[in-house]
Image (cartoon, rainbow over all chains, first blue to last red; front, side, top):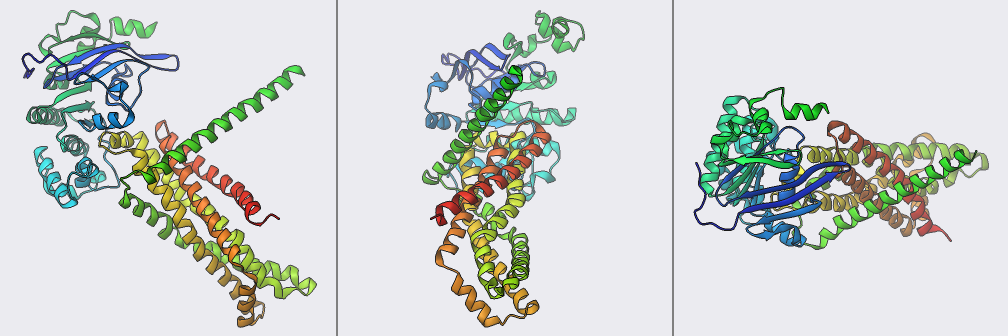
Length: 263
Length: 262
């Protein structure tokens, strides 16, 4: 499912030399990542390797210590606050636990971004919410429920619906299948691939679910010790030749990751 | 001896730095929240929700507190004042105590326990479940959506609650004075109105506006900045109530000095 645009010179997302530390702990230590327009990049890595921090830095929820983050060739870290907020308008994100607003019904969660941007009336927002819910396989009647009345899988679908409702051209997925059974995980992955394809968006997903990574990604990158240690197409993931990737993808106890943990 | 002295100085220094840092952070947070009042859009629905939570749902607890406080003041002041044949002064004592002090302070403390805690818990839960980050990705400034409407709701709702508390507090005193202590109703009420000056009511309402703002500020600040899951949310809730209560009492003294010191 490689949808890379031929001849496209400017990457949609380019991260260079990104560093972020929390106290003594250097979480990101010079991350370089390039995502071309219309493609999906999946960042894999163990728990606590800084995948979520990387995503938050790119979105602008966290300020990196050093480095460059470009969206369409524009360095977002050098923009003023208003321009950064405007740049964020082009972004949709599915959070790990859905992050649905408890105090609002499902339809208002889905249409929240549209209402916030004053793009639609409340009546129109309801209609758009019903359409988007249908795209993720949920009935319009779900819109009247509260998020707490939904199962984990349904919450992920609503989170996905909310992320795509404003038709963003960049999508981020934070552990999209975590906490779901394998079948529901595959369903969510399928929905993600469909949505990204339909919108023509560029996507970055982070996960430690290998099956999910192979389903979603046009390219996969492995984050380890704050750096990207390998990147390539999903077909090469299982035979990467990189001992860190090899141990991680095969889930072996012995290997460089374990040795470093012991040290 | 020298080490103990140095340790004590270090302790005072650390406390001073921590207190200064907290004051600065709170001031910046409050000013940031207030600045969004003058920068559209304003989220009226969020404001109305916060206002109803502040004013309507706090009404029973504030009403009960006020009425019983008025009753107790009437009873206590009569017990003391009757020894000097000054029992007739209780109408003035009740109305001044309630309108100037007990109305705003007790309503503030009650609302801090009820609404301040709920606010900190709600925002804290939103923080640890990424809902606040989600707002940022949905073209919404979290301060503008979550904090500003609550600050305004607090500053408007508490004075309204205090009006109710004042009326019920005076009524409580009136009931005890007429039913139990044998005062006549009309003279008691005339005494009440004679003693009460406009400044008494205005100062009480101004205090209430400040207390309402402080309650919302503490609830929002501690909830918004909570960390570390359920334990962090619990800590934020406790801190919001404790700090709001202390600030209410401290500001009460400061505002009383401002309004009535000669």
